[in-house]
Image 1: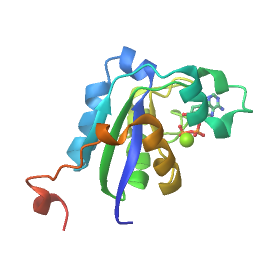
Image 2 (image 1 turned 180 degrees about the horizontal axis):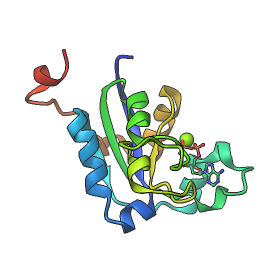
Image 3 (image 1 turned 30 degrees about the horizontal axis):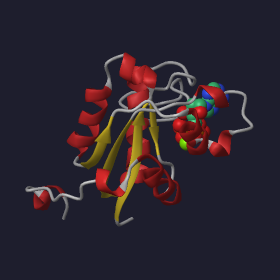
Image 4 (image 1 turned 30 degrees about the vertical axis):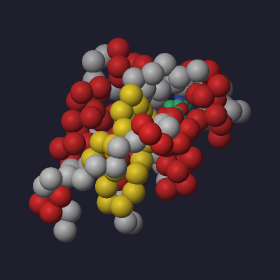
Length: 144
Ligand code: DAT
Ligand code: MG
């Protein structure tokens, strides 16, 4: 894919466990650009809209997020690879979920699963004036 944006959210357990910095660092070190960042406790309504596709599932009530947003080539799919499988017991070592958690109900992070989802989730969580489209000073050393 071309240049994409995704929506990444550290969930309350990741925040409580002090993993926000490490998670942001993994995306930074990979070469992705952070264009928006905030710490919020989402309203119940926002969390329900975000996970609307899972409304019928028994675990629906427990899902809330803190967040980061990154930008770069193929960031949506690569972000999912960095995060690892939904069930941390199936997530490969070296992924965020594979390294930091053991329970699907406490899997510490969200990442958009497609271009369509990212384009819904980013404006759901960020106002247009909360995203800063800056340029890397060293862009040519990261993206060819
Ligand atoms: P992902 O977060 O990998 O995109 P998803 O969109 O299918 O996974 O589900 C959203 C979240 O819902 C997931 O991160 C954790 C929770 N979840 C999914 N399946 C679950 C299950 N079987 N039991 C408990 N929680 C679950
Ligand atoms: Mg999902």
